[in-house]
Image (tube, rainbow, N blue to C red; front, side, top):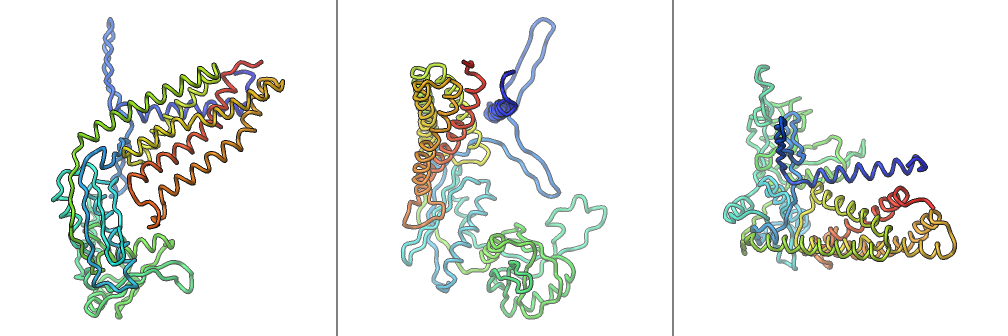
Length: 455
């Protein structure tokens, strides 16, 4: 590597480091190692890395396991009808989004972060589909999702100094003000006319206004926490006594965070009820069989692609195969990190993207052949092959990305696909295309610069 430029050496080091990190994330959950040789007796178990830390009252723990969808992990599928008869037409969209966000938060607290929550609307009929992978107790899931949201306002109490360190958020905000979701008429986003910052405006009914006046008097210059289903969502400081039942929560809000907070508050105030009308439990046996067949198909596809590349391009094809291995490591690592919820169509999208991952290499190598036939030296032909194939690579992949975005339907348009299965296929395909562009143009190019003998 002495004749290589510093940039090429740096890029090669980045590739090696990236491949090593991805390899670490994809080792089995535990690897026991036992060495007994002569006087050496060493036993140790290596574990896949996990994130586990505590920040104040916040605990974070994350295992980098694959997240499987309903068709692979088994679980429960629920369909609810939404009663919207008591909601005004101008507040219907906000009410539906609020209840969707409320249900999403509940199933996430239930430990199902890969759940699929979907609104289905047809004229005056509004329904909610909830898919809960890995949940076999359907009755427990129905009771969790179907209950009415509970909004509570609780005041800050003084904690003795000796108990401060062990106090939880529920110890700090232990004083019930008597205000709940039945007292809140609405929460909406407004812009402060003086600062142009987003704020959340609250309006209480007559009884709520009276209780809120008492609470703001009692907790002046202290905080009143707002809990939704016993989960704290905000802790505003009372800056003045509010007698008329109209309050404003301000802070460093963006428009999006202010909308999110108003939707959470409305989830405990809007008069929406849901009723389960369909319930299905899916076993995980079919899922395990699908995973095994999908892995087998992926390995066969990968081997066939590698044989083709080596057979057709020789040493260049072998280097492209190394790039393909890096592609696979990066892809499945991102599946763990994001995490991507893998369904069987999603696995099919990954298998398809494995074949597409070599498209850029084929375009580049064929272009290199043209340059070599024109009499260019090998190193110059290699650089020209990458440069002049880029337009074709960009155009071909852009078309596929556009198609993938239409299938994924990121904005939830009703006139496009809304199926979770099809979206799973689309997201793995789109992710695979972006990674294949990176490996084809950056990884394979630098591997060729380093590993191909100079002529």
